[in-house]
Length: 247
Image 1 (cartoon, helix red, strand yellow):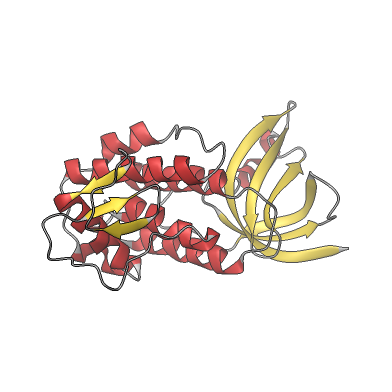
Image 2: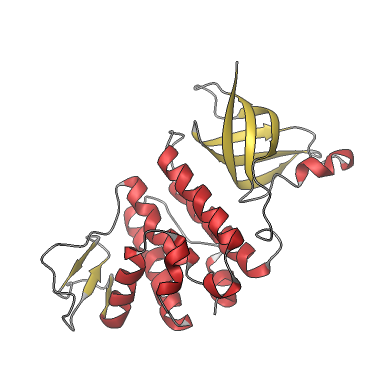
């Protein structure tokens, strides 16, 4: 029996001489691993173009709950990007986002709310003006934890006017008390962190003006946050490239 579902390609790995194994975040089944035979043959180049990280596809798949590797009957573009896959900076951003998503999706469970969020961010990034894309990776990194029950909370009674605002990365909350450990954000950086966290949609990201140093710091701190809260998260291979291209 086959099922029709959308999917976002997260990662591909060559398999044999002509095939690939693709990690795809699907609308119906969550993250799944698919073996796709023969896709690297020269005569099928037009199909292989679709199988690259961040591609949004319409899929017809075979699905068996007890199998670790599934198969795809058919796939086609669900949306054709304007410049997301060709613009160097946008592609660096989206490559980071796909790696982060792949590291956080631990179980093949359906999560349609997360799927629609990711789809929306990708579509917004594709059409975003060049001067409004630098905050996308930080926005994505801050919003993603809420879909796993790990969102950073804003306590109701906290004083944001205080000069001693902190983000406690271990506890996942804002506080006016300096944590006794070293995993925290403080001062102006904590206020900027809060401003990005308040953004409800990526189209509003131009409201927060960050310089390169602050953006780098906050991305590094969010990397630390994921390492603290997600088992075996490890390091981000795309972080260095992302930090270099963002201004």
